[in-house]
Amino acid sequence: MSTSMKKKINHKLDALADKAKDGTEKLAGKAMHGTEKLAGKAMRGAEKLAGKVIDSANVVAHAATEKARQQTERAGEKLIKTGEKITKMAK
Image (cartoon, rainbow, N blue to C red; front, side):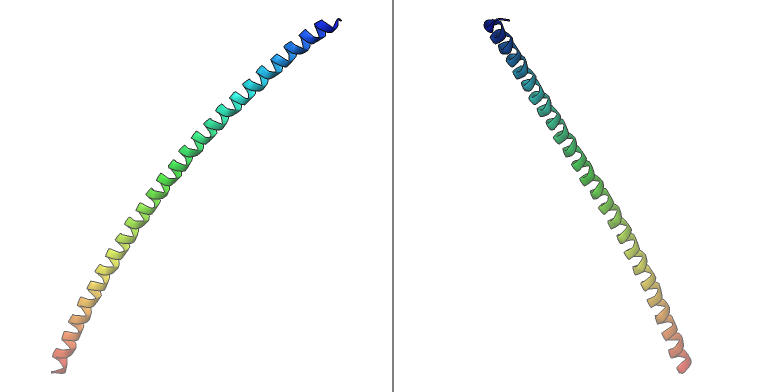
């Protein structure tokens, strides 16, 4: 094979290698972008879910607080009635 043919073949091989490299870089860039986009969606979904869990916990905490308040109120009423009975009996 002549030197000029070798140079042409090497030149074409170099050009093909450059195209393959460019294609690979482009594909890697698209994959990176897709991964970042998915990670962003996952993060937003996790934040939304965490917000719902916090909201649910707040609702439960408020309900428990209200129940405790009601029970305390009833206990206070019973103590007052018992105190009144004891006072009447002591007279």
